[in-house]
Length: 108
Image (cartoon, rainbow, N blue to C red):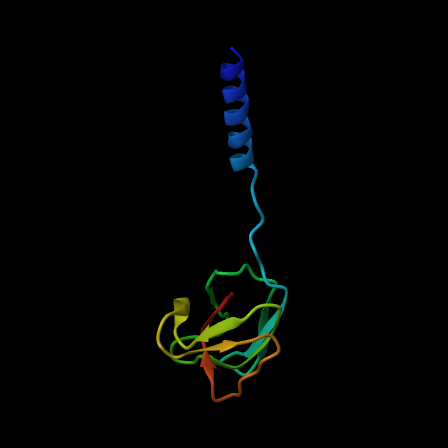
């Protein structure tokens, strides 16, 4: 009978531990860029590992001048959905000039 109770308690504890949600890792700070119309824009405090298509950018008119003021490395892409070979990794505090075009970003 003890084994049955111990097993039931252990299984119950395991199920409870799996049911408790964990917080997603996120980056803190601002990622800034200039939109295709020349407006300053940015995204703040994003979830790590999630691709962000940058508002105000299009295939015909991407943004430029990315600046990473977050706590994570930001990998920027010319293509939407964090696709394509044209990308760069910006460590916290890094900036690229207006010659570098962007449409999406993902944080480590």
